Amino acid sequence: MESSVTAERNGTEVTGCPVMHHDFSKTRELGAYWELANELRESCPHFYNKYEDGGYWVFTRHDAVKDIYKTPEIFSSESITPWEPDPIYRFVPTQVDAPDHIKYRRILNPWFSPKAMEAAAPMMREICRGFIEPIVPKGSCDFIEEFALRFPTAAFLTVIGVPISYTDLFTGWVDAFFGGFGGDPEGAEGMARALGEMREFWTEQLAGRRGGPVVEGDLFSYLLNSTFDDKPLDEEVLLDMCTVLTLAGLDTTRAELAYMFHHLALHPEHRQALIADPEIIPLAVEETLRYYTIIFGDGRKVTRDTEFHGVQLKKGDMVYGLVSGANRDPRHWEQADEFVIDRKKNNHFGFASGPHRCLGMHLARREMAIAVDEWLKVIPDFELDTDAQLMERGGGAMMALSTLPLRWGVKA
Amino acid sequence: MKLCVTTACQGHGRCYTLAPQLLSSDDEGYVTIRGGDPIDVPDDMQDLAREVEGTCPESAISLID
Image 1: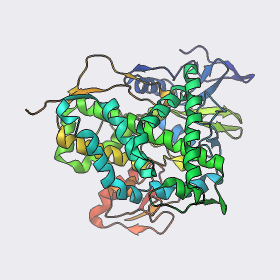
Image 2: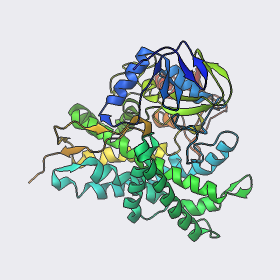
Image 3: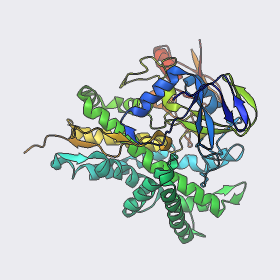
């Protein structure tokens, strides 16, 4: 892996830093990306990851990842994928920097606030029960196909005011997009097609609402009536917003739910703990987000020449904060490599940190807590229904299991 | 003991979820005392306040003895 300590970077020599050639887009065995993050973190605090046409700096430890997040004026969100410094999409507000970023966030924050999610919780719980009920008598299921893909999608669509009947259409787009997002060239075409079809869908949805009033529970009518610097949001920005909300809102919760239920399938003592004391479910959700974080790393673009944690960075360089390394860094965490189900001091980066922290975090954690609570009420005991090695999507696009077969006893 | 939250708060919500007896959120999800005056921590909630301090990913929370 480690080839030499010097290499060419944009014609300049990189010195005093290991150079590696990792591909983070490949599908690997479940858990392989967290093991890799542990290895990288313990072998060096930073290295240069070189690919055919370029490369980027990887910072592997908690202190540096935290400093990247805390210094957005140096680490721009213009690109968040270091292997693609100039992506074909633009997420708003994800890829917008100060001073405009916060103006967009202030429009969106109230819609996804804890209070708004509290209000939506009874509806989410009802949707959740609706998906679990028909599964219970079967005694087995593919957790992802039959639950984790569907429940968060249906809950999200309901929260933004789109009919649940569009669920399958959305899951198809999201799968195709993430097939290319992580840097796998074979997925590039599908990613571009999914982006185009989503934009068409949103264009139609917005056109049907333009000129109308804010309708309660309908995010699009709310966005169409929102202002940025006293002017309505322009069409391109609206479409960019809708796109990122969809992509970020659907795929991520599916992935976290699957890792959480995989853990619970293997740990009856943790299922028992959650059944005995449902109050600790939110803590278990946070620990899932730390220990089984789906963010392998988070990319940023350097805005000016600077020295950072012993590395001389140049304007335009890409950096990658290894969130999976930080979330299990023993320099920061007690019992770093253990799943502590009721961990309280849990300042993990599973939702990122700094001004770009995940907008949908309050929705995601509520969906996860509701899913665990409702599932354990009717299926308190379950286990893996396969001896085959489970595989996970590459960390470049955020890790996700593709299948999770579960089984349980059914009362006659 | 007093507890204060700086404007580094990004609204992760872990503090007021862990200690609803001490803290609450505004309409955007920020803690209500973000960038404001410190609040008093009752004697029987000092351990809880230390957990709250340790749960903030932005290190926005500080305790003053």
